[in-house]
Length: 346
Image (tube, rainbow, N blue to C red; front, side):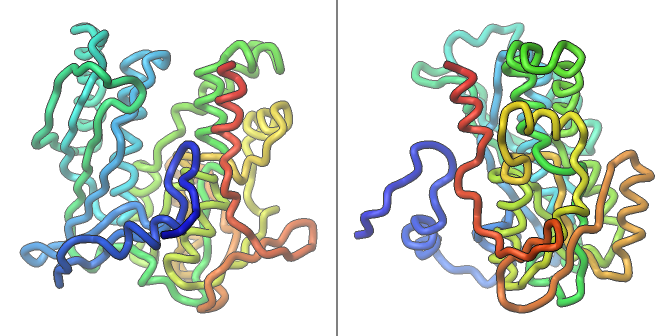
């Protein structure tokens, strides 16, 4: 028995996962194409000649967002994790275990928003469970599974990566950190930078999805693997991707643009934006011959993008270039978003 402790909050640490979870995954099955692993947001089965990708997440509802906006975010958290498989999201199951204080009007507003987003992205809701229970609390009010289906040749994953491939990043760092904090704690932003700054930061909330990014990337056969830069942001995402694929990356930090409102947020609240949770930032590894075209297609769709690195070896790890210096990237471990959210909530 290891003496290592679970983190106080957030995902369990990789050591515990490797020791306790990963060796105990039930019965083996030859039709599992991709199973649970660090840096991969989905699992994939081979069923009837098709690849079926699935991803399960908490259904995350923050009432202070307003129930329509909260449900928008809850839907995208779940469906984005399967969209990065390269297959088109098709089905969704939702279990809602709501607190007793949830009203009929709030539930109707929440569900109408889920339906609207599902229709927009061609996703059908096929089963679920809806109830109010004592002991259930916001924001974790159940769970959901998103399902994507396609030909196996359309599937993207770490196994497809090759030396010489390029790294493309959309939107820049700390998208989720900026958007969430500005909506949850508007007075902090207004006090620190004024009302206009607070509104600009809150508008970043609408960028917290990679569904449109993935829809563009799916059109390029040379896109090898995709990842949404969630916990620990771009640095955490790159570290996990290199580990999952067993390859080495060299990343030019100076090539990754930071949105001005995000830069100001990081400066005012004194955190490293590259380590901060960034749902909505897509990291894609793509064949070098298609990198420029992918960047152009994303930008034509109104999604900012940058080519910022390369796959350079078969030894996993990330080397950062910044101001002419090279340093090895260590996993950030602690995401500054959770520290700031706890501090602001006092």
